[in-house]
Image (cartoon, rainbow, N blue to C red; front, side):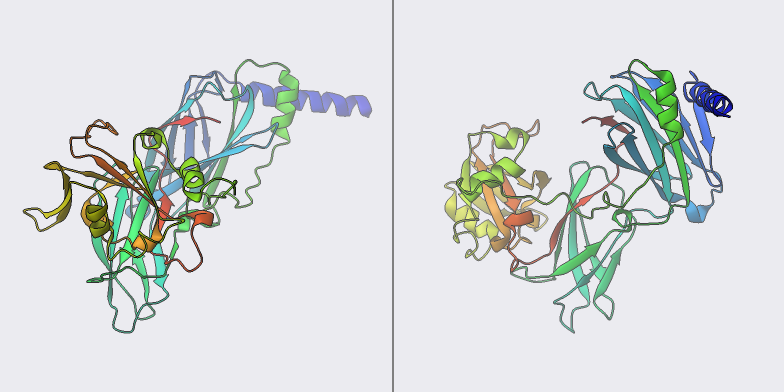
Amino acid sequence: MKIKSSLLKTSAALLILIFFFLPTAFTQTSDSLTILINKKNVWQGDTIAIDARLDNFTKKSSAATIHLWIEEIKTGRNWHYRYPIINGELHADLIVSTDISDGSYAFNFQLQKSFFNLSGFVKNAEEKDRLMNYVFITKNIQPVADVVPLNEDKSFSIGRLLFQDSAFIIFSKPKQNRNNLIVTLVNPLDSAFTPAATITQFIYVGKKTDSIEVASNVSNYTFNNNGSLYKTTLPEVVVQSKTKKLSEAFEKDNVTGFFSGGDAMVLDGLESDEIANAPSLISYLTTKVGGLMQETNENGMQQLKWRNHRTEIYINEIKADAEIALDINPSDIAIIKIFQPGVQISSSSNNGGTIAIYTKVGSYKKSENTNYSFYIMGYTGEESVWKK
């Protein structure tokens, strides 16, 4: 019996191995979802082409979401991507970074028959409040400014939104001088759900070593998503140093890329009340920065100019208009970095300088702070990089 059992296990492992390392594209189908991956064995630097199709496609299900959890079988480390599936189809390219370790990985696809949308509730809305403004800004598209109606219970809903990576959304009351809204926000894509279909495929990165062991690991694999990857906002920030100034610790945790350069004046809203006590953010900046002027353009919109050139405004490193900055309560500002004219922050930088505004997040945000602005995670781009 022992010999037969051993033979059965070895035969099963070999069958799995043959199935696992087919050199051509591999298709797997569930009751309502088909997944096609172009390669089963890849090297660092390769591109994994993923095609998905809804088999029971109808106009009502024309927009849905594919969640992809990649799990390293040996260590349990995982990565989460989510893609929009529009008109029943999806094509995405995932580039394998050079820092991905050799080994076997499970690609777990889950179909969620929901598209990105937002719903919420205004905790401190007044009985007369019927509308709420919002501004939606991302790195890839022009800011969207619109109005959302409030229901009788002061709840609201914003329909389908399509954007990549992260976005920043600001809510405000119409004709409000100082933003004091307290809003709760929910996105169904960041909440636990029961998948309409689940498909698991296996990819091996790098040179194969012990093939039987790899096949055995695959045969024993079970995807267990405990919901830890569902997050409405970007990760919270933890202050790790009490000896540093709060503004320095904030910069280390939140300022990236060209914005981290040293050629900037930093205005501190964490340990100083000067910004918080200002009547508005724009008026504070024009009195604090010599030569900075507030103007109204031909469309009646507020803008800032420095040395007769328009000043670029970034909110949490996302490009925005000065008009949007008016919706931010000065007490919610962590730091402001001011780059003089001539300092190149982006390819579109001009001679009007750059002002980078950062709002309080994570542990830098005090409990008494208002809650009307949110970082939110969008969809993974059609071409993205799988990296550590």
